[in-house]
Amino acid sequence: MPQTVKAAPQELWTSKGGDHDRDRRWRHVTFLLVFMKRNRSLSDYIAALCRDYRRVRHYPQAIDLELTHRCNLRCPACWFHGIHGVGDRFVGRELSTHEVLALLAQVAQHRPSLYFGGAEPLLRPDFPQLAAEAASKGLRVAFTTNATLLDREIAEGLVSVGVAAVNVSLDGPEDVHDGLRGPGTFRLALGNLVGLLDARARRQATRPEVVVNITVNPAVVGRLQETVELLREATSDRVDAYRIHHLWFVTEAELQLHQEAVRRSLGCSAAGAAGHLLPMGSAGSEIDATVLASEISELRGSARVVFFPDLEGSEVLAFYSEGFVPPRRCRRSSRALVIKPDGSVTFCPDEWADGYVLGNVRETPLLELWRSKQARQFRRAIRREGLFPACGRCSWLW
Figure (cartoon, rainbow, N blue to C red):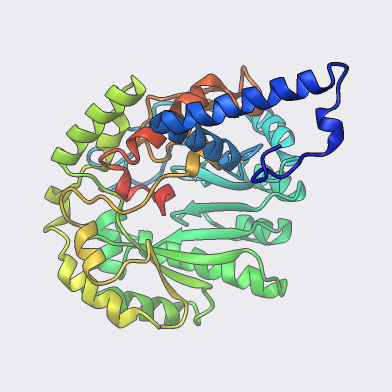
């Protein structure tokens, strides 16, 4: 036996054929090693497949369950109901309460984190019931809301059932927020945010974690410090984090390249990606990335102010420039997936590759979809492409 190869346990090599079978096995091993050495590209491909297989979790670690694409507001930059938004494509086809409860029972044993995504989840009357059921099964439950419907009863329920995190969207001072979301929405949302914090304090609870999302928009650039200080004062500084949230957007040129690449690689459209086109006509002027980078630098280090993605200096300038491609690879298809309001399952959030569907949970168990041929084909495409042209500003990349 070659001295450079560690001997295997004797029982592995012992069979009825004795030395003959052992020699035959070694010839096969030697042939395979020589073949792979002479075919480096193939051996590298096999190695990549093995690495990716190991990375793919037995079950998704995170599930984005989009309960609805309905919303009571019309924010200009929203990819559902903004100027270029795709609208609600699931009218009359949303999963019923019974179907969502059955889905929760199906996934609970695997304990993924659960994000109730989509548009405004509080528009579903059964949302408190669904959140309570998910939390009772030990799932980490989080969601984002515009807070206009977050009344005292709902707030008390969220605290009592142990929802893990609530993200409240506030786009800037009152004039900025109302200019984007409608008159009176700032005071209503802020009052309900305070009500949620009060409900948590009354129960002396640590959950839910309450985060304010301040999404970057042209009107708030130059006023981020003002916004944070205003919110600190209005909430008695009880918010767990003030998140400066960069804008998910795509330019016309990037969109064309993205849709062509998705069609070529995945054989489907990415029509929904157009919902991320910048609505500059309504917002006034383009985002001044230089001013924004300076503001971020000044805010860095302020108590509980965080940034998503966490960019600084030249990274901010690059993010808001044409053709932005970060030095990253997307691994989310090995860890997470999205369930649309009608039960269809995709890998990409926020409509970036909305035409690629794995199947539907109304027809097929989620675990089968996770392991399906469609899923494997998508993972191979992502490994081959690296990133599609618009993927650099996708939330799941960061």
